Length: 180
Image (cartoon, rainbow, N blue to C red; front, side, top):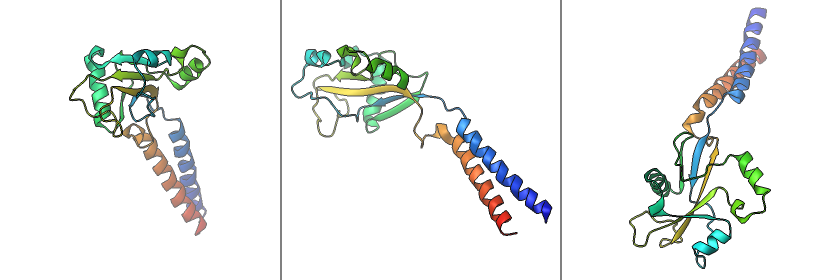
C-alpha cells in the first residue's frame, strides 16, 4: 500500500511541476492591429485637428503594400488582426506596454496616442467598412502594439497542454491518494 501512496504522491508532484512549467514557458509576442477601438470624434475633425490632438494621420494610398494588406485584413476580421512579431509593417509603430507607459509621461500631444494610426480612407473606395456605425467614415483609427497573444491563441497551446496535464496528474493522483 505504501508503494501506491508513493506513486500517487509522485503523480501529484508531477502535476505541480507541470503547472509551474506552464507558468514559465515562453510565448512569443505578436503584433496587434485593432480598428474596434473607440474612435475619436472624426465627425468634426480634419487632418490638422487630428494631428493637433496627437494622432498620426496617414492616407491609405501612402501606406506600403504590406501596411495596406494588414489594414484591410483587420477590417475583414471584425476589427482585430494579429501577426507574428517579425511580420508587421514598417509604417506602423508597435510599442510594447513599457514603451507606452514611458511615452505617457511625455507632455507633447504626439505622445498622447502612441499606439494609434489614423488612416485617411480614400473617397469611393472598395475597402471594407471602417465601422458599422460609420460606414462612410473618412478617418479610421487603428491601434497597433506588441504584446502577448490572447489566451485563446494557438500560440499558447504548449502552455494549455502543460496546464491540462498538470491538472489531470493532480486530480488523478489526489483522488487515488484520498481513496486509499
